[in-house]
Image (cartoon, rainbow, N blue to C red; front, side, top):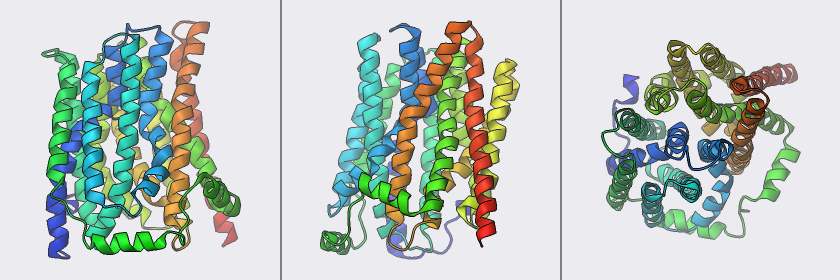
Length: 432
């Protein structure tokens, strides 16, 4: 782990300068992001608006909020096309400021049904803007950091940001547990941190941006922008990638169902405090995740993404089994173990999600394959969490208390997905 934080010999003065300009802004924005990140946002919504409407409406809101990080990916290709040929830093600063303001607006949402709708819309919009930031940031990093050192530089930025997200989640958990001040002030503080990050990011630069923009503008007419038509074309012409996306849809869909169901079950069935829920579902996974990234990175380098997923996929299965048993047994110590296992699984899953498509794409088509991947991630983000909550509500309508067994659904999905990756590995080995 320590090797990820060592500076090592600088590849160039410009790369070091770029890193110094970026580390603080992204850490500050991590504090803002932590308030609208998956489980933390879902718990805050459940706690804040518990009496704003009927349980199924509030729980559906929890589902959409927990799935927002994935759902927002569906518009990633729009951001990529919008940024094409435009100066990056000014666009990044504007997006960062808009993201911070949207998070701050959550603090003024009235605690009524209209306020719930406003909060969900604000979170979804904020996550769409965050997707734009990540999409545009990729080009900035590619320009600023040498290929042989990009992992070291960006890895340190991502780890700092992840720890800031975990810190914001921990502060939210402490606030909800102790009630020393109104949780609305969390959003004001998060907005202030994000605006400070945007202000500092004004000093960032893109190395040889004039050449990047000239190349992008010259490519108009030669390079087809990503579109839904291209998505279907790639899936039709590449059977291996199509099968990989199929198993990712099942595996990832189960993963996305899990968080929203756990938030509702922890609240309504186990009656866990909101602070404890955030600690289990956000703080522990986010804070410990960086510890396991180096292990998965070495495993990823050993072979094809299908080989990697055939092994990594089972780590999520073990985590979900542990969380299910802990939930059904009402045994909190086992839930803590499950939270750590979830961090292990997510560390590997994040690496595979960001890089796996490259093993299928030909030269020059990596961005198109990534476009397919993120768009389909958005689709399952729109379907998975609400479907999981509707199954929960249906079981509860049949017999109060039966809703907790809706966790069987994500368990089956991630298990079938892991089995699918293993099957795909056997088939691809036989074809070699």
